[in-house]
Structure formats: C-alpha cells, structure tokens
Length: 235
Image 1 (cartoon, helix red, strand yellow):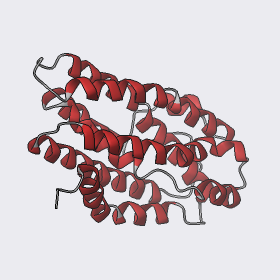
Image 2: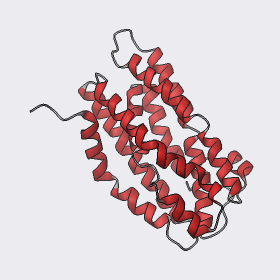
Image 3: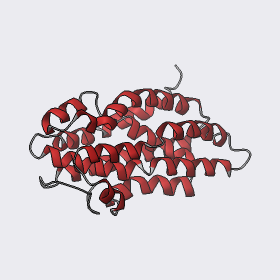
Image 4: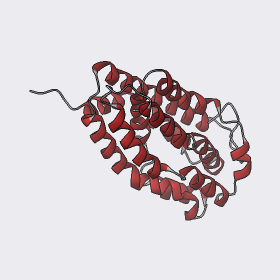
C-alpha cells in the first residue's frame, strides 16, 4: 500500500487542531452583542486579508531567487501567481462590508493591526524569508480550510438586522474557498516536497490554526460595544 497523499496527511493533522477554532467561532457568533462583534470581526479580517497578496508576492520573489536546482520553486511560484489574482482586492471587499454595516472603514484602515494578526501572519513572513517559501502552503491550507460556513451569512444577517449586502465577503468565501482548497491540495500532492519541507508546511499549518483560534477567541471576548476599529490587542 502506497503512502497517503500529503494533502490528506496534512488535513488529518489539521482536523485534530481545528476544534479550538470551531469552539472560538461558536462563542464569537453567539446572539448577545452580535452586531458589534461582527463589526470587530470585519476589521480584524481586513487586517489579516490585506497581508495575503503581499505575502504571496514575497514568496514568489523568494522562489525566483531560489537556486536553479530547487525543484519546488518554479511550480510553486506558478501556483502562487494564479492565486494572487484570485485573492486580489478581497481586503477592499471587507472594508465595503464594514461601511455597509455602519463601521468606520477609514479608521479600520488606519488602525494599528492587532497583535493576534501580527502573530498569525508574521510567522509565515519569517519562514518564507528565512527558510523556504513552500512553508506558506501550510498557512494557506489552514486558512482556506477554515473558511466561513455557507450558512453563516444568513445567520448573521438575521441576528444583526444588517442588510444582506454587508455580508458579501462571507458569502463569496463560503462559495470560493472549497475550490481553492481542492486546487491547493492538488499542489501539495504534486510538488516534489522533501520530508523536511513537508514537516515545515505542517508546522506552518498548525501555527496558523492556533493563531486563528486565538484571534477568534479574542474577538469573542470583546465587550458588547460598537467597534469602529480593532484595538492593537485584539483581532
């Protein structure tokens, strides 16, 4: 019997860590104080998502600078260039949703990004720069695999009384991310990753799940007040 595909191995590892994300999300979306927490969530997601394209662009640059004998760099860069175009502008979607929900998009854009976001996104930046850009695949696998559920936008619209248009990003990611997961899994299985590179991808994925759980937990713990912009200590 052959070895299991790496994508399946990685998803199995993630499934053991993801209950913490699910528990934090359940607290985040509880009925009391839902509207201000949704505004805080949008601000936090903007801080997270606006790092996506620059992070992938840096990984592409590192791939282009890789030694000629690196068999992973070229196909990885090819995949990332495609995915960059798929993700471009999603941070603006979040600001538009926030404005429709009554938040202050300019304040969110100007705010110091929360510490939890810096922790979550900072590690892949470091690993891309100082180890190998393939580590970014773990970050992406964890985030794409924990996209909003298809029912969440309707639940939040009913619970907050906000217009349907304020949930565009949730709906879009619920629809798009399953295809993104499938494409990423194919890349994980086709790239000639070494054993140590697979370990690095797994470490990156598990770090991301842990950071996402922390982020959602901090948002869930926020007091029920209108949130125009996330504070530096909360994501």
